Length: 222
Image 1 (cartoon, rainbow, N blue to C red):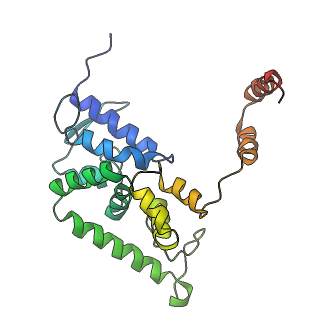
Image 2 (image 1 turned 30 degrees about the horizontal axis):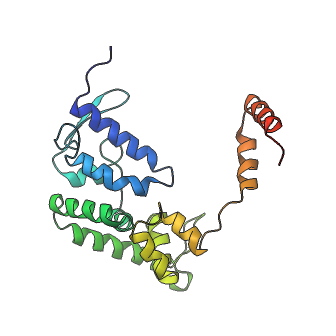
């Protein structure tokens, strides 16, 4: 029989699940709910961020400040590196995102100052990397005037600059992610299904390819 769920176990699993979502495109939509859960909107009715039993080992992590939970490396915390990224993402999530921002403001001292400081630092770093400023982008990184930040930051800034109406629809929660809004605006070209199939075929095992071919054969002809 599985042991009863404790606040520490729920906290560790919620942190792990949220961090795993960072690899996908829908994590921006999940972030407001995660913040509410960690701050007390959960089945136990207590803040979960203070003490977590992290899977798979159940190692206990304890923190005294919510900002440490957001910003410390993963497992010790959630793993964000920029307050601006957090704020910019939440701003795209309509009323849920604004509610999450309000909750964070109550827990993090000078939250808005931290956001603006990170924003200035990001833009200054990017400006210094401009070729005309004598800087050089890091290997494999193209210069972008939209700032360093995460990919969501850059897309939101680009939308506000080049497609303000779609940026407003994103902020109202009409799109599930900044990427989806950027596709709608034509800033990102959506990957053709054929390209996706070819990439998946290369990664598939021989057994998976055989199953796929059987599925194709059984599909009715149109």
